Image 1 (cartoon, rainbow, N blue to C red):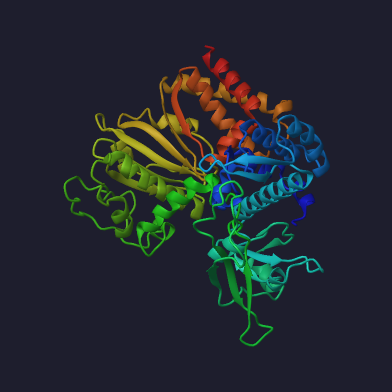
Image 2 (cartoon, rainbow, N blue to C red; image 1 turned 90 degrees about the horizontal axis):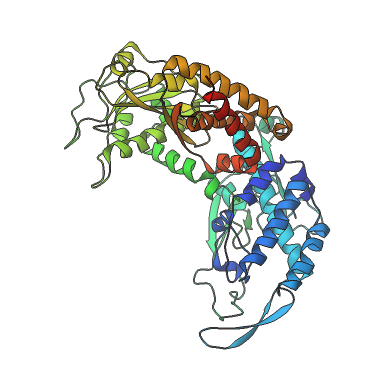
Amino acid sequence: MADLAALFRLRPDRAADYLLAKGLKLSGPYWELDGPAHSQVFTVANLAKLDVLADIKGALQTAIDSGQTEKWFKDQLVETLKAKGWWGPAVRVDPDTMEARLVKQGSLRRLQTIYRTNLQSAYMAGRHRQALEQADRAPWAQYLAVMDSRTRPAHAALNGKVFRLDSAAWGVIAPGNGYNCRCRARYLSDRELADRGLAPAADVHILEREPPGRRPVDPLTGETPARWVQRGVSVADPTREGGRAVLYADPGWDHIPGSDGAERALAERVLARAGAIGPRTAAEVARGAAAGVPGWPPSAGRPSAIAAVPARPIGPDLKAYIDAPVPAGADPAETVAERIRADLLADVVANKRERGYLQNEVTGGAVAVIDGTATRVKFSPQMDALAGTPGLRLRFLHSHPGGASLSLGDFETTDLAGITSIEAVGSEGSIYTGRARSAVSILRRQHRAAVRAVDAELAGPLGRGLSAADRYLVKWHAVNSGLQRAGQVEYAAILSVPTRYLMQRHATLFDAAVDAAAKASKQP
């Protein structure tokens, strides 16, 4: 199987967060849930006791958090499982037919499988998330088998093959792709690929078949899966004329843990929407590849979502995307805001810069858009004039390359006469919204006090071990949560799943930081 020691060389929270993010689910046979579903829930086949399931997950979480061994994991659970009646074979009665069947419960072998399978999945989820963060630098993944007497021939056949990290084929066969798979991945840049004399796998096909052999049977009901498929990948084999190397993932292993589960659901949804802009990407449109078209006619039945504003030329593809008809019964403002968020996230991921939209909250229309730098976006004179017009109800939506919450400057923007609220879309998918309640001069003083208080908490024992990126996320969310509690600002956050579980993992630190920020910002 995968080198489990590597799990403990991985940033611990990368693997631990993957398991922590899963809810508990009682299930029947192992094939009842497909592979992607396992990215969202923790389950053990044919375990119908929620307290036992929680005990097993708790022991696994501790094992990952503190680097405990398989022996420790077994020692923690054997007596507990025996005391709760989930050990050894048991007789179960089918509630429909009243037929008695023998089913397997806990055993040392079963605990070994649970430990190894879940650590393997957590390790791969963490590795893949790290790889995605470095995809701009290293977009290639090389499949590496162990190549010893225990290596399965199909796994050995793909040894050394190279795939795009974001390709559908890699999503199917990325290791581990089966029980006790020991294969791993090496991530490479374009230069490293050339220096090693490597080339991407040629003539790649994704395959699907019914697995060979008999279908599995539920020991309690006698049922078999309604759909029983196995996916794999076929690539050209240069060592044999006309030959091909084929690898099928084990059923349920044809996905990368976490990549298609809750952790990436928001990003995938908005990025998919951004693809609707047209044949060019959001980034290409943002660079002005399409010329501005003044005086576009309004959409049928409502004002044009994007009016031509000299802030920056807006290409027709982007206009068509934002200005598409709103479905019947949908709220125009929120529908267009969702499209804007999709473009913001697509652009910040592609270009690592801020972009801003002014949106009319009454009609729902986006009335201006402008691109900024990696750290700020500045209104054009025309946008300043709009934002300063009393009576207009404008929302300012923009992106944050660092993923952090609203800044003091963001809140100060809401002091403009025409701005009712501000929203930031973080590069990891979180959405932050708010507005100032205090006068700017007061808010600046209270904001500085809140920042000092949070910095003091982060410098304490609970803050040690946080990476710089995680510290950045925790700091600004805590500062704004404290200011909101003290009544200085209105503030709300829809956190992406990774950020939410970052806050939960460090809940004691976060709560203390919010308390300190609230207390400091209440003082005159």
